[in-house]
Image (cartoon, rainbow, N blue to C red):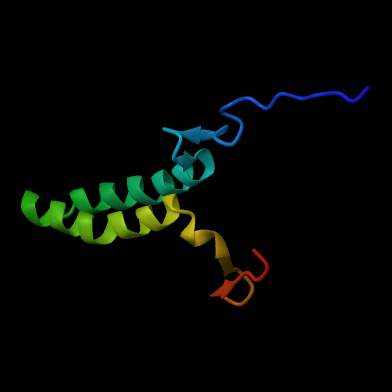
Amino acid sequence: MSKIYRIPHNYTNNGRVFNMFKKRDLKRALIWAAPVTFIIFNLPLSFVSKFSWSIIIVIPPAIAILASYADWLQWSVVSGQWSVISGQ
């Protein structure tokens, strides 16, 4: 007799936040966004300028990280440049 395994409904969403973002990607985005935002908001600018610069500089890379677009890029410490990872 063969065994029948039941797959839970949340099997594919395991390890995700809000069923959308992988925990690893969320950590990467926070590691990027938190220090950069802190640096921008400590600059001697008006609040509107700080807010605008943070939107321009922080949000696009954070979205790319959350969407897993950055998985195929890898920083090479040896060569000191970005390289594309093939086969992923």
